[in-house]
Length: 80
Image (tube, rainbow, N blue to C red; front, side):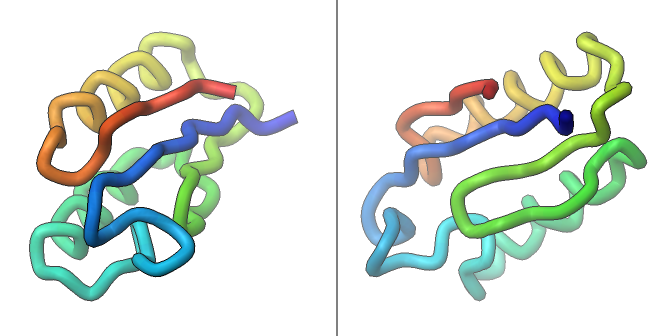
């Protein structure tokens, strides 16, 4: 089963009104470009990032911490 990182977004990116990770804001687009550089990333949905099942726990932790530092965008990051 793939590992998932779910995010709770701040206004105006919060769902359902906002588009979360798929927003067209230049900062969000740059963030997406950084996230997809990890080869373990399977896909990005508006509120979650799905990683390969065999993803190293350190990679999962790195991506999670990176997202937590994006306080302009997210209020909470949860690993599922």
